[in-house]
Image (cartoon, rainbow, N blue to C red; front, side, top):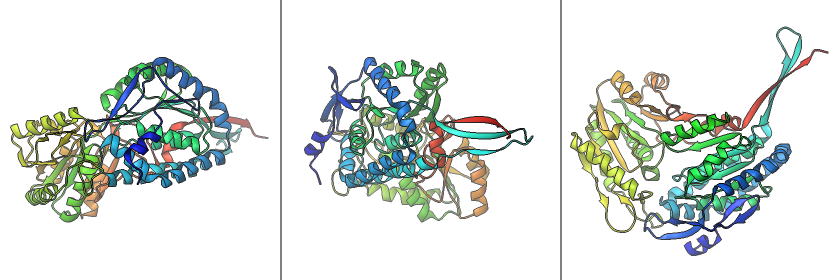
Length: 484
């Protein structure tokens, strides 16, 4: 395994514009959330840098769009192969800047890499259709074309997978891109851009802007009519603001926004499977995932036993720096996240919930919060309305199926839901009635590169991954020709 210092020395610290690494007068410190120490300082982009990045993307857009699909495919496949060779380096880098346990970071390398492989295969399968119109007066040609230069904004919680999930389909479709990673975890994206260079990606096709002020680079980019696509993963309030800004130039938008996932356990569920699913759906990535289960809606006849079992398991979690052997719960991303988790738990307990384990911040270095289980959470508690984004499992009992559906749908969000039942007919009813873009039926982890990821209601628009993912970066053209 490469040492931490040697790895950090290999990570570029500049902006990546037009195939060149550029320094800036101002810099951003990137911190290790487990210690609070500075890992490295990187470039801080300005509005002028944003314009330069768009200039570079626009300059090579036509050439990249005209590049043979097989060539685009081969570059993505080469990037996938290189990532597998360096999986330990990418995993360690994510653990250092984001805090997740090393085993989970290695899982993210596998997951993130699959978007490169999947869209390398989709690049050569972009198709249209051809046929005579119903009246027999003409022939219809429907073709797909790259939408054009894209601006991709990625979040801090999955620094590699969120980058590959956006970059891979854009490149496969023939689009050039500007990527803005979160300032809390930018190193993985910078290291990935370096890998793309090595894979043979032409200069200017991918450009990376790191900045301490998102608005400083985002507003001028969205205001420029040369930009044709915006893809954002993050909170709903920020997504709403970006959509308003994107409306001026009628940009194509993809928005993967907040979640408030229900995890419904019926009385006939396999309780062992439900507990395993709950632990995966809640505590993966330290609870810092938009797909994390937020509200555990458990039938009253099994709620006590479910709570007992999950509490026993949660008490056995090992907390620490993600690089340490056996650690299952790392730090939260920063102290603000710790404060938010504590406030949500305190509010729920004050309104009648029972604290079974945890419930406190952990003093000392780093941003740690105890893995927590609370039960009998009451209506009106903030924890049922807000995305927790922390290691807190909140249980709400229910009495019948209609009650479960009402509770599950009682949110403005609709990203993902989880249901555990052995009744196949009930499972089908849940597919039909729960208002979410995705569902895990008797499983606690659903994300897969081959499946369309996205939500409904205020959880966003568009899909990433699957056959659907590449179409977010393509525009459809219909051509009529005469019948000969």
